[in-house]
Length: 559
Image (cartoon, helix red, strand yellow):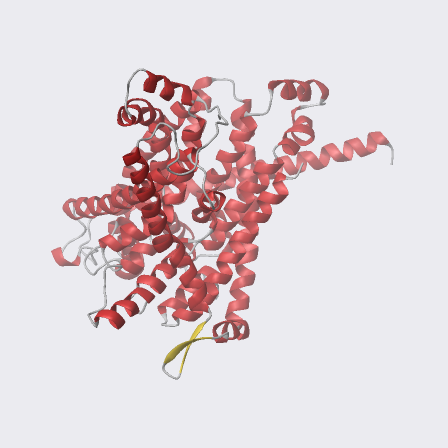
């Protein structure tokens, strides 16, 4: 084959790949807009029929008062969970950014946990430690003889569980910004006579506000759309929008009620996402320049007084204890419970749970399903994100570019319950295609942010050279841009794979016949009072998610 023929064949292959990716991107956007429209339609245009009602106690269809009450309760739970995340994440960010200590890299590495370990696993962990038959209640009963604590199954329990699960995100983002602040400004203020309290509140904290808000809003949205924690831990008579929508669809069969709740939830989330776009843009414009200043050990800074050093040590120990108790212990509890069996009326270490799993045909079927669904979703998310990032990069109009950037954030304002509900209205019965396409429609912005950020950092000289030396734009994309974006592409795939593998909500909503993922299999095990087996299954699921996430980071990081 001549060089001209090879070149022609290569160009044809590239056009086929590019055309397929563009077509799939259009399908994903269509499968986001159509179900969303289908969800909103009954609430806006369907007449009241007086049939089954979500708000059964009122005797009528879901009214405005009940929607407002449920929305306020949802906002309360999300706000409380976010405050817990900030309460732990902010001081942890200080120590990570301004101090050196043992296991600092381990603490910073926790930021990957909310991104690659499913929230179902965290929920099982809290049950294993703080549940009615958990370790803490066994200690309470053994030493005090009192009643078992039910605090986990309350508003406070939900807030603490969600807050500690998400605190690494706050810690990571604020720590990066804090580390980038130049110390010259603070030192100048100290020379002019300002004490440490004045330096913090007048210089440091105002500089950190964009990073704090940029981390808080995503955490708030994660907690606002929380489904599994609320479903497992909420007290009778209290529920959030997400759970109420699920109950309306699956239990009451009240489509209009579910639609009204979905509209309220989405409109509230859009306002929050709008605030997020403003703060993210301001932070990007301000930029970050990291300063490699020498960091003192905990309580060893020269400018601190004796009292402040003691307080710093107490704060460090206090935060460390809370992290160990409410973050590390639940995940350790999952592993421990997976290796525990009830024999002769006592809990003993055993491999029975794993033997039971490995002998189960359902486990192997769900494992196989999880792997291929997550592979499809991760790959499709990466393709869609790359196509969209390249599209925005090609647009010259500032106004059009801004509209496209805002559009990329819209999936953040829509929950998986709502989009899954919409797919059931459109397709009636769920299938594997609808699961993959809906997961992609929800998760691709996670990949897009990484890919677009890396694309914007490609030097202009490289882009100009690629444009001059390439036969066409597509040639430059395959020869220069894609190789340059290798790391974020692999990392994005790992993120989306982990999110897909850990997703319990969409498989539960779509109710695909004779189909279950490992996360859904784990959830059903816990619901059938086989908690230890569920922990063993959850441990395997967590290991799969973490392994793919770590492998994608390692492969992408190679030169």
